[in-house]
Image (cartoon, rainbow, N blue to C red):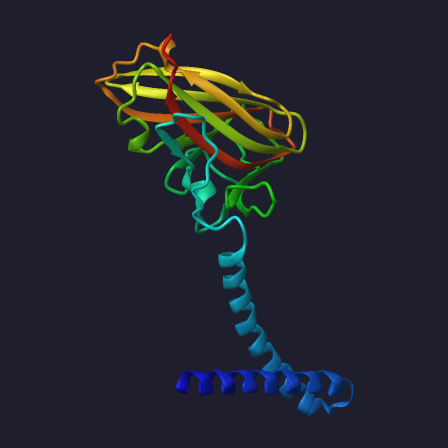
Length: 257
């Protein structure tokens, strides 16, 4: 009973407050300056509270949901992963004049050899109907006097737990390019003092792209594998914008013949 009464009172107060502000809005043109100044102050205070509520509500209710683990993966996959850059919000959400070896979150690092950095990186909110990742990453490159730009993604320990030479590692991306741009993906697998590398080329057009790394063509020591990471290398990125809407990884054992 008490809850019903409180709900009724809340609704009544909200309706009365809305009617009051509607009345103030209708009379604003004819209010004297003292009353108008007072109304403006109260309206600004109210707007701050409302903007905060809307910001939190939009962030929590907007699809895809923050922290979404929905990943399209091949049949028989035994591991799949979406890095934190595309999974949850970062603070701060962006950097400008990014220096080489700058960390972006806990898993990503940006490398380049520019003398003067004109690179901006920012996390953006995905809102497309086909988006599975809550966030994307936008890179704006203006002048570029270097020879390489790479985004290095460190994969978690679960990526190498039980890793075998019969595994296929799949990288799936969703990319928006301002202009055609060559992007290379290099898988690095560290086993003991040695590191195996496999390089693949992503399509230089917009949309979803997938490449696979076949570990059967490497010489990894399965008993000593302890780290894996991927470099996304962008060739001649000057005066371009790249938006990585999603990046996911998965692995599966190759079919026995």
